[in-house]
Each structure stands twice: as C-alpha cells, then as structure tokens.
Image (cartoon, helix red, strand yellow):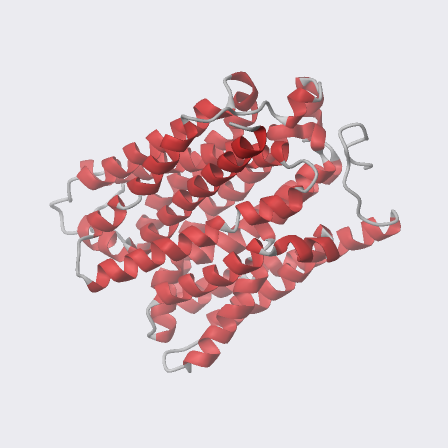
Length: 417
C-alpha cells in the first residue's frame, strides 16, 4: 500500500472513530429520559451519572499524551474500539433498581454499572481524541487547521447519524437498549481498519524534540491562557448539546433532538469546507467571532417559550450552531501551530481540559434545570462565551501587535511569550 493510500485510510479510520464518539453523545442524550425512568434518577443524578464519561475522557487523553510515543498510536486506537464495545455492554446489562427513588448513584448495582459503563466509554473517547489529533497533525503538518476542521466535521456528522437513528428507532418504538447498541457497529468497523494499517511516529518524535522539551511547552504563558479558554469553549459547545434533547423539548414543545441534528448539520457543512474560512480568517479572529455568536445564541435559546414560532426557535439555534462550530478544532489547531514542540502532549492536555470542563457543567446545568427551569440552564452557560469575547479579543490585538498570526515550525521558538 502506498504512503498516500495509507495516509488516506488512516484519515478515514480517524473520522469513523470520531463519528463513533459523537454517536454516543447523541444517542445517550436521546435516551436520558428513558434512563432516568428506568433507573429512578433525578436530572441532577443523571448529570452525575454522565460526568464520569468526561472524567474518563480527561484521564485517558492526558495519558495518551505520553503513551502515543511509548506504545504507539495503532495499539491505542484499537484499544479505544474495544472500550466502546465493553462500555456499551455494561450499560445494556445493568439491572434496573427495585426502589421507587434512588438515594445515591452508588446505592444500587444497576446505577453503579451505568456509571461504570459511561466511564469506560469516556475513557475510550479520550483515547480516540488522544490518538487522532496528533495523528492528523503529523500526517498533514502543512495544513493542520484545515485538516483538523475536516476531521472534526465528523463529530457533528456522528451527531446527525446518531440523531437520525434515534428518531427512526423512536418512531419504530424500539427499546433504548437497541438504540444504544447501534454504537457497536462503527466501533467494529474502524477496529477492522486500524488493525490493517501502519501508523507513523508523531511529528515531535520524528523531529527529535526531547520529552522534557515537549513537557516544557505546556507551562508557557500563552499555552496556559489557551488551556483556561478551552474549559469555557468546550463547556459552551458540548454542555448544551448533551442536554438539548431534554431542554429544547421543554422550551419549545418541539422534539429537542431536532435542534441537535440541525445544529450538527450546520457544524458538519462549515467544518467540512473550513479550508477557505481558515485561510482568510486567522484562528484568534475566528475564535472571537464564534464567542460572540455562541453567547448570543445561548441566551436567545434560553429565552424561548412554548408556543414560540418554529422560525424563531431555529433562528436562535442557527446563531448558536454557527457560533460553536469552530471552537474545538480551532483551539486544537492554534495549539499545534503555536506549540509544535508540545507534540501529542500539548494537544492531549488541551483536549482533556475541554472534556474535564463538561464533567462540571453537566451536573450544574442539571441542577439549574431542576430548580429554575430549562431556559435558566442554557442562559447560565451563555456567560462563558461572553467572557471569552474579552480574552479572544485580547489575542487578536496581541497578534496584530506582533505583525500578524503566523504558524510556528519545529525549528522555531514555539511561542514568543
């Protein structure tokens, strides 16, 4: 197999594995009500059950920052598929509690297995992100922003596929177990591809950058600023997404999954054709624009009431959908472009920060949902991108003062702090 064919096949496998992680996200969101009923959970307890998925993601992606170079990206990529299959299996066989109301998520065998299954899926999601981001940055070192955006188009692509599957299976009145079980299909497919391919060493290793030098990059002032920003961008994007099927149904009397599929469709198209956008709009300015739109969109969505016209509801969703589109891949791109010596560790730390933030935001949104209603849950998150407007605006002026945003090569200083 030629090197170009191998590269293309690995890119496809990366897209399918990311699609698998987002199918979990959508289908899990769609069955939240079923899980709450079956396992006798409150919204807040359900948020606590979901949190380990993101804690697990964070733990595994941080570890991958080192393991990619020690045991290889191929082994880790294959392991992620096995974890998905095992995690789904645990949830499917979890026994439903016999009590009327669960006092604690650790009070029954079923809720403990639910917790453990989502944790294992989260660990696998972290491994996927921990492998594919440095893999793509290594294979396409000359066009990282474009290729990372195209890769991450398959996050909303998976949301769409998972959402359509959820809608069709709901219409067919099948069980939540069957819905969740569909996740095993793409997991098995990309496992088969991974096992037949040759994986490169990371860009950092092939360039001879030492491990201590790699570690030093994550303590640079600019990296630390971006690290904090990643917490807010990820929470603003993925926190509302996970609650959308429940929250938007309460706010509008329109099936919430429709909003998730619609915003995912916007993201898929915009990320897939991100080349011209990332060519003309540099990452700091793109992040600033996204922060403005995301803040407006979330606040607007939170103000919707039952009886709101379909047009107004989807107009608000459009503003939010466009705003959140470039947060995640652009944060990863700017990390790789400004800190290439940070290798897979820098990208994994950044991705881990994003998912760790969601472990906090989900129970918080659940608590706001329980006590103040669906609208308040969304509007509380709108504060995060509003704060980011100031930070990203500062980055725009910072790079303008330096003569413009430029991509750093491994032969240059990673960031002029």
